[in-house]
Length: 104
Image 1 (tube, rainbow, N blue to C red):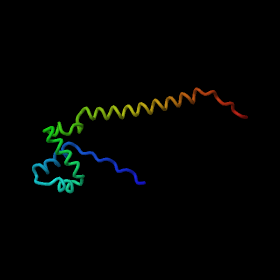
Image 2 (cartoon, helix red, strand yellow):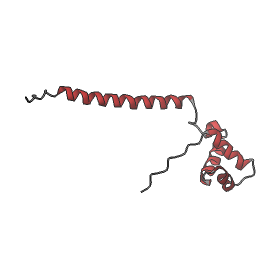
Image 3 (cartoon, one colour):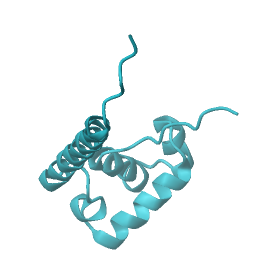
Image 4 (tube, rainbow, N blue to C red):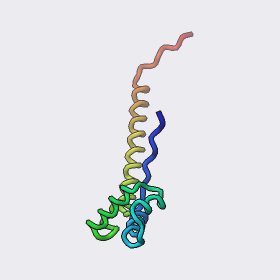
């Protein structure tokens, strides 16, 4: 079995440019998707988002906002703290065991 392909992420500027190619540039969704190397259904979804929300900031939230970076930093810190906690639990169990008698 082959490993799953890592999911690609696109920033708001890329999405907005793809939508602009379709809405203002005279490209069809299929042409734009081939040129950009992405699936046509992604562009279709982005066009719908832009039509519903109006601006790229509201249509594509979560891309490069300050609070997103802070959230990612806090998640990394949480993961580190969990690993440290688990390690300390294991070390405490090792030291809590009675010492084994040495054979001479």
